[in-house]
Image (cartoon, rainbow, N blue to C red; front, top):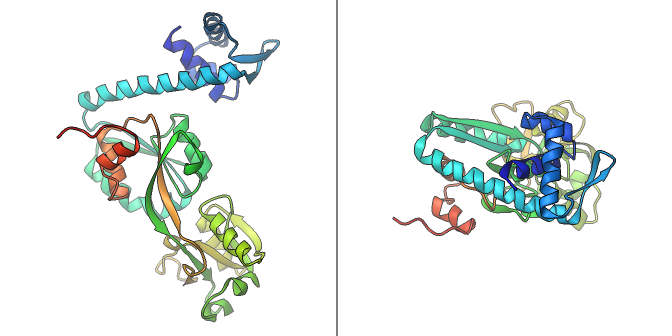
Length: 311
């Protein structure tokens, strides 16, 4: 048994059992991947994959256990390499962040600008997706951390670090009748075509819950995970919108007006998600604290179940 075999097994599972795709990513031959997997199975005495002819079609029950251990071992090996890098290369490295459109567009620019000035030798990469995709990037080792409002708590292998709370605003073109409704109610909103977040993403479920609690069905004529799309269609007069408060800028969105909706919806919490076996470079801790000041290195290490560093 060797790390190469574990890497092959994990990559094939990651590529939806497509051996040729895994071989391409691993820069080796399809036959080489298949042979190493067979050798591992022979040594373990169990089949990791279910086969139909030469095709892999499923992962066996013992294979699930093997994969879990293999992924943990590979991540630990990666952490060992990072320990060396931490002291050999200092501030040189890469930080990969998986996040949603709202965070990437409205929250991160200023934070990343300051971070990159303070850490000029760190290359930052953003992977954008919906909350579930962001979590999957971290679990697959393709991102160091996820920033999202939904989904992080749904994954047992992720540590969820609360960062800040936010709520929503109603947006509408100037002169829209809803802008004069005081106080604004869910009943009033439900009477108009609504453009808002997909209820699966970006805190949209809190909107859904609020309407459901009042036995109301909002007239959602368009949903999206991108606040800019919502604002575009509201500006065209196709409906009123509900967006995250930080997604509305009076200077940039001069063709729209906003009304605070914090009294109508429960607040949502943006979180950072880390793999439970994550090993962070010093600049990783620095980024996390720049995003949420309360998340010091000690707080993060405590959440990851690590002993406090000696002073």
